Amino acid sequence: MSVSYEDLLSQARGLLSAQAHRVANAANLSALIYHGLDRVNWAGFYFLEGDELIVGPFQGQPACVRIPMGKGVCGTAAATLATQRVADVHAFEGHIACDAASRSEIVVPLLVDGQLIGVLDIDSPVPDRFSEADQAGIEALAKAYTDSLGGTI
Image (tube, rainbow, N blue to C red):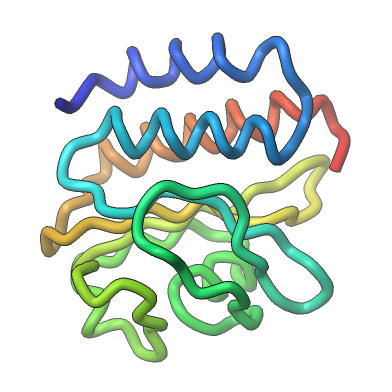
């Protein structure tokens, strides 16, 4: 069952407001997104460690553990500090296939005080699943997450 981004954002703020722990909030937000959005087969976080992204809390099939900066959709979002909304992951040069069922993907970089801490990654088995409205909603959820950290990383 899919809920509106307005409802998801309200629920996210409630979940994240009493806690500033990066992993706890990532775990709760990934579960909220995974169960709140329809046609999603993976929702989770990768955190920056050195020059690569390391898998964090997520919902879905087992995931790639390490992603180099600039590689795949997640690494590209991290390196460019720009949201990547990919209609067909098979057409994305250098796509890293963690789950063969994924067909489209959106990845939002996570910034705290202008510093990259990781990315929020959401996959779908449906081609072209994510619209501009989805992007705006998911970017708002990512901001609620980074705001919940209170400037700490």
